[in-house]
Amino acid sequence: MKIRNGMPKTDNKTHLKLLENDWIPIKEPKSVGTAVLLSIPFMVLNTFITVGVIDIFSSVSLNKFGLDLTSDSLSITINLVVIIWLFLLIVIHELIHLVFIPNFIKSKKTFIGLTLFGGYVITEEKISKSRYILVTISPFVIISVFLPIILSLFGILTPTFKILILVNSMASSVDILNLIHLLVQIPKRANLISNGNKTYWKYGGYKEYKRL
Image 1 (cartoon, helix red, strand yellow):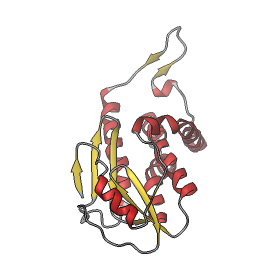
Image 2 (cartoon, helix red, strand yellow; image 1 turned 45 degrees about the vertical axis):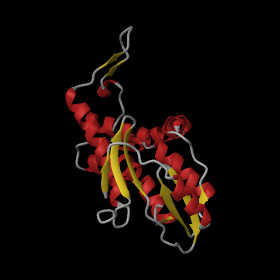
Image 3 (cartoon, helix red, strand yellow; image 1 turned 90 degrees about the vertical axis):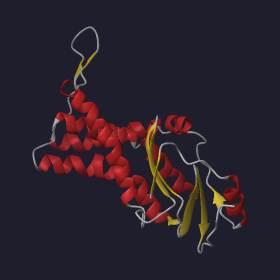
C-alpha cells in the first residue's frame, strides 16, 4: 500500500498492454466532476434510504442538525467539532474501502490519498467482480445503514452522528454510480483491474504485466 497526494494517472503503455491481453475498458465518467453530476440521483436515493433507517429508531429534525427554518432567513450552525468529525469521516470511509481489498498491506499497487474532492482508494491489483462490488459499497452499507442501527441500540444516535451518517450517505453516491457501471457492463466471474483512473475487465485467467 502506498500513500499519495494526487490521483494516480493512467499509464498509456500499460493501457496498450492491457488491450493486447484482451482486457476490456469500462465506460465510465472521464472526470470526478462528471461523476459527481451523474451521481446526483443516487445521492437523493441514498439519503432517502438512510433517513428511512434512522427514522425507524429516532426522529430526523432539521433543527437538531443546526438548521433553523423558523426565521425569515436560513440559519445554519456548524461547530469545530463537526468539522473535525467530517474530516475523520472521510478517512474512515476510505479506510473501509481499503480493508476489503485483498492483501492491501503488502500490495505495491494499492494507493490511498486525499485530493480537493476528498479521499480515494485505488488498487491496480487484479480483483474479482464480487470482491470489487464489496469494496465499492462497503462504506455506504456499514456507515449509513448498519451504524445507525447499532448506535440506536446503544442509545447514542446523537444529532452529530446523524449528520455524519447522512453526509456519508450522500458522499457514497459516486460509489453507487460505480456499482451500477459494474452491474450493467461486467458479466459474472469476470476479473477487474485498474490503470490509474481507468478500469478494465476480463474473463478467467490473468497474465502478469509490467509497466514498460
